[in-house]
Length: 259
Figure 1: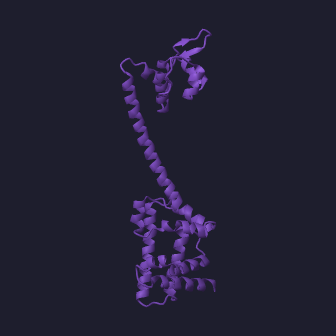
Figure 2: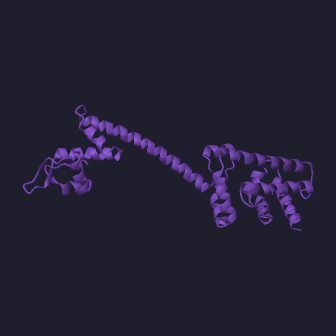
Figure 3: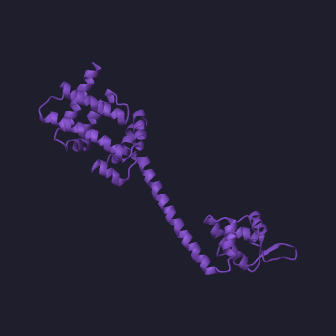
């Protein structure tokens, strides 16, 4: 509003410069908040430099959410000069900016959670998944399966889980991995009844937490565990060859169920 400097401006001039409607200026005059300094010979309202300066302060306070009666009280306080008003407005604007920045940060976290399908902060994801971040595969998964019901169901469920929920999911997976590693190291065939039962539990785990895991889908996952070196490397961290062993058990269990 620093451009509102004039010796004499009509209500239309002030409205055009300030962006405030003529109707609003008339209302400000009616309630005594901004009364033009004079009138022309024809009876038109004329606003002085001081009027324009007062309007600029009104608009600042309005932007900060002050009610009109509160603004009138502030502006008509004889104990406050122009500098004190500017200082007050600067303080209030900084406080508002801090609140807006906090809101933006919160929205960005929510947007990230929505886009990645994980309602976790980056720190929480690190705590749950370690250096394996499943979110890095999100774009690829969306491209490959984004139109499938399973993907949509998985996304909806994943966004609902807190850190504690993911910890519970991870604990189940760690238990499965431990049992598979134990069986593999003991030389138990992946096609044995015991290991196929573990594969069935693995399928049910996926259905319980993410999406309905049919035997066809489970076969596809087993193939991906072996064919995608990223998944193979992550699974084989527990024991070399575990990804292939897990795939064999999954296929054997699916064959048994479908026979």
